[in-house]
Length: 100
Image (cartoon, rainbow, N blue to C red; front, side):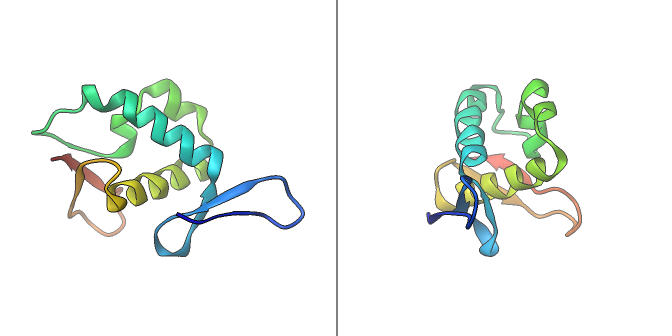
């Protein structure tokens, strides 16, 4: 996982999948929140990130941050931080996950 400071800014960014960069604070917030939410996830059900997050956390994110939260979580799944697998859906639909 690569991190960098944005030129002329105090914001630290973290590289995720497909050369996208997200705010490191957002990345860490999503990771910590999802560790807390894992006990609520059923192994037999498919979820989007939005469905796994509690409503208060999700509503606290602005729309661009929600997109970046999804990218960050997909990177965490891809990296093996969370034991989920990707479920194939339509390309334009939000990614769905299944707990392994």
